[in-house]
Each structure stands twice: as C-alpha cells, then as structure tokens.
Image 1 (cartoon, rainbow, N blue to C red):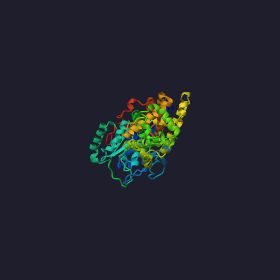
Image 2 (image 1 turned 90 degrees about the horizontal axis):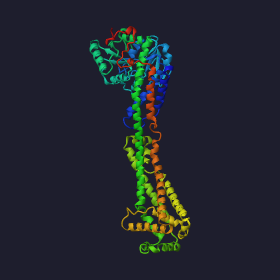
Image 3 (image 1 turned 180 degrees about the horizontal axis):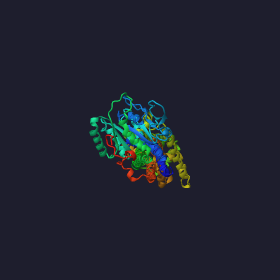
Image 4 (image 1 turned 120 degrees about the vertical axis):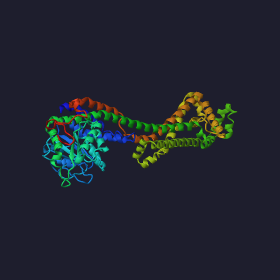
Length: 601
C-alpha cells in the first residue's frame, strides 16, 4: 500500500525503539509499565504493522469473553462447522482456534497476523502457545473468527493470550451471559475497547426467556454509562443442547451470523470496521508511548540515584582518608618509634626548642656519626597509610551495600548479582591490599624523585648532600601528616616535635617556600593515588549498572517516534465521524434496520 508507506515506516521505527529493556529495575509501578510495554509491542507486531501493510486483508473478528460464556459453541454455530472444542471442563480453550474461509487460509496460515504464535492445522484442541488454523467453506470469505481463551481463566498464560488476541482483532465479538454480564473483568476489557475505539459487538448468551428484557435493558444502560452507546447487542436464548458439543439452533444465531455476513460481503463495510479499529489503536499511541517515555526517564533517574549513592559512599571514604592524614593519627605507635630511631634519642628532640640555632649542625652530626634506620621508618609509614586506605574502603563498601539494600532498585541489582557476589560487596575487594601497597610504594618513590629534582639545583646541592635524598624524602613524607588533631597527652608533643623537626630540617636545606610547595605536591599525589584506588573499588558496584536500563536518548526517541506516527496517521484516510466510540457498526445492506437487544427486527 504505497499510500501507507510513511505510516508503515513510522510504526516500524516505533517498534524498534521499544526493543530496549526500558524497565529493568523495581522503580515506581514497574509491573504496570512492563505490562504496558509488552502490550504495545504485541499490538504493533500482531495488528498494527500487518494491518497497515495490508489494509484489504481479511477481517479478523476475535470472539472473547468470560469462562463458560459459550464462546466455542458460538464459533461452531456461526461457522456451521465443528471447528472449536466446547466442553464443561475449564479451561476449555487451551490454544486459540482461527477459522477462515479456504480462500483466506493462506493469509492466516502465514505469519502475517500474530507472528509470535506457531501455526498448527487439523482437528483437536491444539497445543498451548500455538494458533490452530482451520477452514470452513460455510464461513464467508473476507472474515475469520478466532476463538480466544477465557479472559478470566484460572491459567495466567490463557488470560495473557486472550488479551493479546483481542488487541490483534479488527472486531471484538464479546460474549457474556445473563449471569456474568455485570462482572468487573469483562468491563475492564470493554472499557479498553472504548479507550481505543475498537470496533465492538456484544453477544448476550444463555439468556432465560423471562430474563431477556430486563437483562438486555440493564446491559444496554451499562454500555451507555461506560461510554459505549450504540454498540450492537445481540442476545442468544438459553437452549437445551442434545449433547455437550452440539451447535446452537440456527434461529438462535441467525442475527449475529447475518450481521457478520453482511460485513464480510461489503468491502466498504469491512473497510469502515478496519479503519475505525486501526484509527483507535493509532490514536492510543499518542498517549501510551509518552507515558512509557516518562516511565523510562524515571528508570534512568533511579539508576542515577544508585550511582550517586556509590559516589557518596566512596566520596565519604576519601574524606575519611583526608582526615586520617591530617589528624596526626598516622604519627602514632610504630611510626613514632621508628622516627625516634631515625633522628636519635628523645634528648635530641627535647633540646630542639632551646638549641634551634644549632639544628642543622646537630642533625648533620647525627647522620654522619650513625647510620639512620630509614628503611624501618619508611616501612612503618607505608604500613600505616595502607591500613588507612583499607579501613576507608571497607567502610565505603559497607555503606554502599547498606544503601542499595534499602532501595528497591538497589535490591533488584543485588539480586541479579547473586547472593555470593552481593555478600562480597560489603567489604573491600581481595585485591585492594596489594593495590594499596603498590600505590603507597609508588608514592614514596615519587616523593624521593621530588626531593632529588629539587636538590639538583646548585643552591641546594651541597646542603642536601649533607644527609642524603632518602633522609630528606622521609622527612617530606612526614610533612604530609603535619596536623596533630586527634592526638592527646604526650603524643601531641611527640608528633608536634616530629612535624617541627621535619619542617626545620627541610627548610634548612630547601628554604621555607620550597618546603611548602614540595609538601603540597606530595600530599596531592598521595590523594590522587588513593582516589584512584577508591574509584576502582566503586566500580565493583557501578559495573553492575552497566547496560542496565534504557539508553540515554530512549525517552526522546520514543516521543519522536510517536509524533511521527501521529503525523502520518492521516494516511489511513479515516473520516473523523468514523472513529467515535458511539459510531454504529451497521454495514449497510440487509442489516440497516436497527438491531434490537432480543435479536429481532
């Protein structure tokens, strides 16, 4: 259909946009969003795309309704052939049966309509998940009847396939009974037909003669109140059948059969039915797709919240590390002991305040007179910094896992990862100790390199030579941890003396401004290395989000695709009056006279 090419292309593009996993996480009312997405995909595949591609294809009337409404018996009676399998056991219809005139068999046997259902032929009930296609030359060409499973079946799969089949129909022939016509489940489907302007007729089946007038009148009023005025309503009286799978007497279904035959025989009548249902389905896209786009945006916002949670947890870990290198806690215990070994006795430190002028000479004497145990001090510093990194990383992992466990979307991600993997996320990775050790050693090498480069200048070469690059490097490392906040008692004096001595020694060699510059560079480099380590740790969480959720441009692409469908909607050439929910489906010809609820004229 060349005139429909633009619409067909627009629908194809929309279908491709819906291929993304738009709602992977438990964010908002995700169950209804997933259901709406599945329904829209199904309607595009099962109805919109094949129907727009072949506007003159045979009309498909789906016979649907509640359990025990007599759908299969009605189909057999309308087709004048035993094509469906009625019975008293529920569910009766395990696989939908489509009956068509032999002239139309090729269209329905191919995967034109309902392409997701495998085709079977022949008698019997068919296998669940398949579409059984049978022919009956007693059914007029141009019209096929599809016997759908119960919309309120006790089997979930049957309810789902019933909804799918109704969404693929050009015409709903909705069957209810005098005992069930007011049930909520059928009215949920009927309201859906109203919202989508689906062509609809209702068959009131199994009506006792004495109840015909009041029940039919009440049902008519309910149709009006639910926005379905003018819906063709046929009644089939309660009759006693000679056997379980017998057909209804011809007079009981004459009016329904005649109405369907008139539609099948009139190309314009078929076109009106097709275009009305098609127009309603297309119009629904303008509301259904933007709603899906909004929900997809909420998925992306939820994923962003999960990422921000991880950023916050590991940002706090970095802040903890910063506090640890500034509060003097690293100058406790082993580091203090190794520092005292490094610079000599405690008497030397206590003499600094009164003999600061002799500082450089005394230190040079200490270094030249006795080899400094710099290796033990360097190892003590390395061990302390590594411990601080591991502690911060452990706290971040615990905080991140706890936060995700408290969020529905986070729990969903953790469940996908598996119990064992999720449990491991609560502590730093097993590889962190080795990576932390390597990072600290690399930082120490960087500090020594800083000192060597600064000492290469002529004005400092001689002074630096008096006690070596390694010694100056260790002093600079200690300068990174200059604050004594967090220490108490005698530790304050010791740590303070450590910082002061380190500073004065380095200033004696490099000058006060150079010392400040070197200290800041050493601190920045250490923070950068630790930040990289924590980023690697955070990836254990954020990697679980990779490829999850809709692409960034998904919502905008959905809205654009829906707008494109709207632009090309006019290609089906539907008069405005033909798509209103109260529009009559009288096809003209022999059924022009108004159809009364009792089926007579």
